[in-house]
Length: 351
View 1 (cartoon, rainbow, N blue to C red):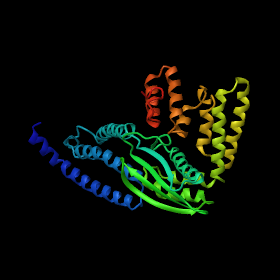
View 2: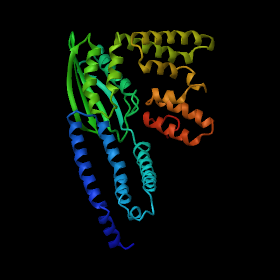
View 3: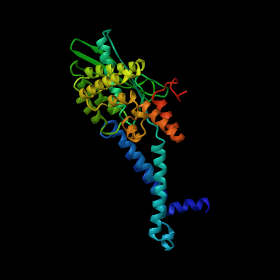
View 4: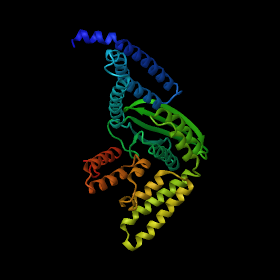
């Protein structure tokens, strides 16, 4: 078929007109969706699904407009059912291709929570600032939509960086939180004030403003706020976790007969921490990190990665098991993700 003949065929079958109308409507719809997202009427995730739908719908529209007005149908050499089969097959191929390009190769945005700095020299102020930053990091680390680096770590090419300052008086606290995009571009900043005794309320207020500016699924904020609201005392929880970690660290220098007693004591502190603030994932993660549970073959790796999508240790341990089982490709992918989560050249496989 000559070029002019092919273009004439496109015009005769109204393919060009259909494509132009489709592009115009899709462009208007996506522009409107972007405005709604900026006004926080819909989420960024909804916009992303609309873009995906528009991308999948384009080849379907082109193919459909070509075949449904085909002269083959007029001459009865191809039945309607045959047209539908062809359209469905090509559309399925387009959907699979877009799905792979959009989701399989989708790179999670990288986020790092840096230390919130107290503006005075009192130890209590800096402990409170550190606790706020670490808790924000722990809550974000539950989410698979973002790659959250180990606390305090940094790496080139970070998409989001969270920092802040804290000022404390006798009974109140004022926290300024800043969100930077692509390095040092300030995307958002706000100041929150609250009572020292209302740390849970303060964290949830910070979350309500900060979460909306991050690429998180709907429901992420509700889950995080529920964990915060269930906590009786963040200060007590922080002390219990610090004591448990100190005991775990001391176990390596003890004679083997004494280690089970110390481990049981540390586990009791972890249980008390979980009772004080039930359901927090870092409590269970500390237990996994300091025991041999991650070495057991019966552990459900899929469930572990789902619960701890941003734990470099979980990724490394599962990668080591995959390597022992001879699955080199998956092991390499898990090791690579572990190194991205904790960008430290001194770690194994991160050189």
